[in-house]
Amino acid sequence: MFPSHMTEAIVQVEHLRKEFDGTVAVADVSFEVRRGEIVGVLGPNGAGKSTTIQVLIGLTTPTAGTIRVFGQDLEKNRVDILQRCNFSSAYTGLPSNLKVWENLLVFSLIYGVKNHRKKVDELLELFEIAHLRGKITGHLSSGESTRVNLCKALLNDPELLLLDEPTASLDPDIADKVRKLLRRVQREKGITMIYTSHNMRDVEEVCDRVLFMHKGRIIAEGTPRQVIEKFQQNTLEEVFIRVARGGDLLGEVAE
Amino acid sequence: MNWRRVGALILRYTFLYTRSMPRILEMFFWPVMDLLVWGFVTMYLLKGGKAVPSYFTFLIGAMIFWDILYRSQQAITISFLEDVWARNLLNVFVAPIRVSEFIVATYVVGFVKIMVIVALLTVLASSLYSFNLFVMGISLIPLFVNLLLMGWAIGMMTTALIMRLGQSAEALAWGIPFLIQPVCAVFYPLNILPKWLQPISLAIPATHVFEGMRDVLENKGMPVGHLWAAFGLNLLYLAAGALIFSRIFDVARRKGLLAKLGTQ
Image (tube, rainbow over all chains, first blue to last red; front, side, top):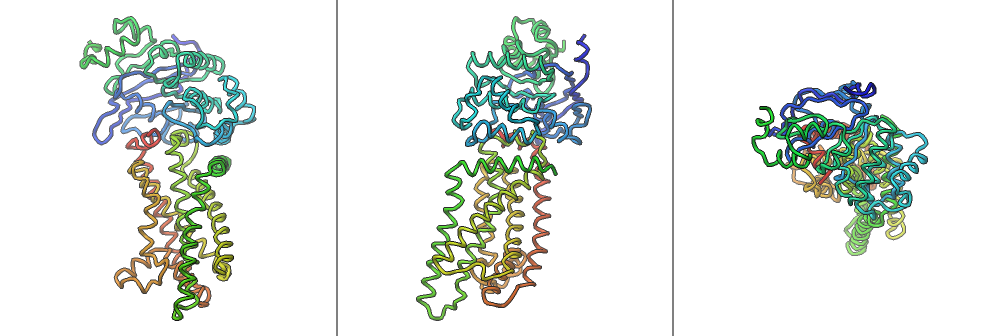
């Protein structure tokens, strides 16, 4: 059972299939994400999680299946839906010769943020990087860049936030701070998050529920504890290694 | 079309171009070098060869006009590449920005850049070689607009090709305009081209602009026929550019190329 505020489906994916020139990246995936949940999408390389995320943010079109976000068809209402979402990835950057506040100002104008100066300052304070406000983005360390990216991702108070390995380039101390901050922001604002990571500790700590993907399908779904128990392991990391190394695991789990 | 978002993108390019010395130098360096070379070649021909008519100064005009076409094409393509280089393309395309808003912002930025460059070249050409671009009078405006339109059309097609072929094809941004340069009679009249090539040349809007420019400099009056031909062809080119861009954008989304391009 979910708390009452977590019953509204924000994301509904039905029979998603994605092929690239005949190669199946996502075979048949269906899931829902409810308001206020943090859902981790996990799986070894080639499992289809990145493709699933790319489809969810409208970067890639599905071969088959339907995606509804906020109850609207993603393909037909892409711009309206993206206005209420945001995205941050360890693999993207912001223009390197702009100052931090300039990059954030530009995106706050794109998203139509009211009181954008105040909002930018609040977020920089929240991520403890107010001192970087006037710095050139290209001069930041990777940890600082990640936090600036996260500020960008929270500018429009998104109802749905997609985070692609947000702590990938952070040292353990900053990664821990970022995880706690994301949790705090999510609790305070009720943001729905979809989170991918190869760091299983991240996922156990942050996510309410995980979707474990393998060879383009979801092979396990539940709380991190439920998934660990399903695979009869002690940690998500052990599950991950077992899935990555077990060629016929899909059949094993189905049995 | 949401003008707030277009304005935000223009602001971003303003920050980008005013902050970066290499970008500012790149903007002015090649046009000024071209002007110096073509200007001195023209001076040499005018002084040395008595048979050379005075309207030979059209070489300087052609050089300035070519730069308008080249820079308007570059404005769109390089703006797109800037986002690829900064790994910012995903941030742009997962923001609520329509492709048309992105393109319009690059048009505006390109227009401003061209105005600045042309102003500089006009002053230099006038002071160094006594070549006055404004001698073309009112004809200058439709000639300029036609070059701008063709540059935008070629820019959309080039960007689409880079989107389809990936970052390794970025050299196209600089190469494509030079593919058409020999055919569109920039520095010589159309009748110099082989007969079989002339119909192809006449299907390019820029040919009519450069022929029209020479007519004006030879005091033949406003080249109405060339201007209408250029304008009509530009409408076709722009429609084709928009169609190609939109189709390849759809292909890029279907094949996952945007995500690849955004994280390379």
